[in-house]
Length: 327
Ligand code: ACO
Image 1 (cartoon, helix red, strand yellow):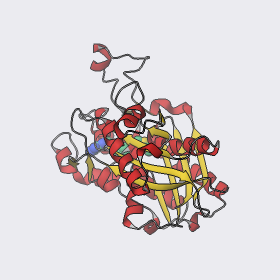
Image 2: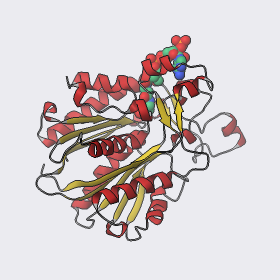
Image 3: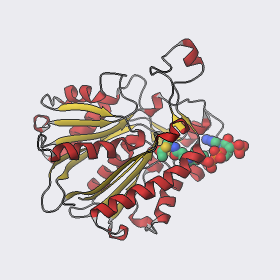
Image 4: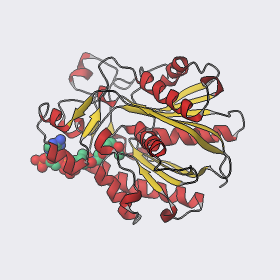
């Protein structure tokens, strides 16, 4: 399809504090070797107690605006993908709107777990195509450390905190979003969830004691579905874009786990040299992982104007999404 929106700027922000695998070795029964072999993760950034996701998201947004050469007043839409917002309500995007001073922008959150950024990107693009929005901030951000059971070695080694953002604007010279795909499979909600704290299990002494507010995951099942769903989503986005996978200058898969990234690459016979990996430094930052990686690639020159990039993700829900863009 002809692109109608393109990325004008990008930015990211992560908390200062780094938690290494050796730090985790003294918290739970694990080892640096196990974590590196099974996940590829060496360290992750963790927010200080009391930190707000809206602060991280606002920092990422301001960096993206600066990179785009635009001001908050130029923004008329803010969509934030997250499952670890500041509060149950209002939407964390409302706090971001206030913090960056984008008072003319419509702002709301999208809950699609690790697919939050790519869902938000596609919703923003569709709204912009309608003609009422010219410049959008699309953000993916999480403070998943607030939802992690730090006594559960199965999950606590996997996640990190951070936020990434892009500014979308009208496309020029064939650059922008060429193909995209979103998918949902609600049959597997129980394989990856945080069941407590909502209306089904409101916060209570009993729900806290049962740890219902923590992330619960069936790791092996998630792994299996992730690889399949990411393959299917990327195939659909490539088909819509009308490009072969080998034409991609860079593939940015969701940074959940090096083995998932490698398995997806293998299914497409796609070279590792053209696949971005930063899970070793950030862990799985859920909705933030793709925009953080995208920003690193743009700023380091690994992605140049005119390059073709493929983005693909999978998360709780189950949700999956992909996008093909000419940068
Ligand atoms: N340190 C040491 N040992 C551990 C740890 C740990 N942190 N965690 C689990 N183990 C043990 C288990 O208890 C088990 O021990 P046992 O054999 O004595 O029973 C053994 O290691 C193997 O456990 P498995 O769960 O079978 O290990 P597996 O090879 O499946 O790796 C992992 C686990 C890394 C979670 C893997 O299943 C995975 O990557 N799943 C995908 C999950 C994911 O990425 N989720 C993120 C959210 S979704 C997304 O972003 C895509």
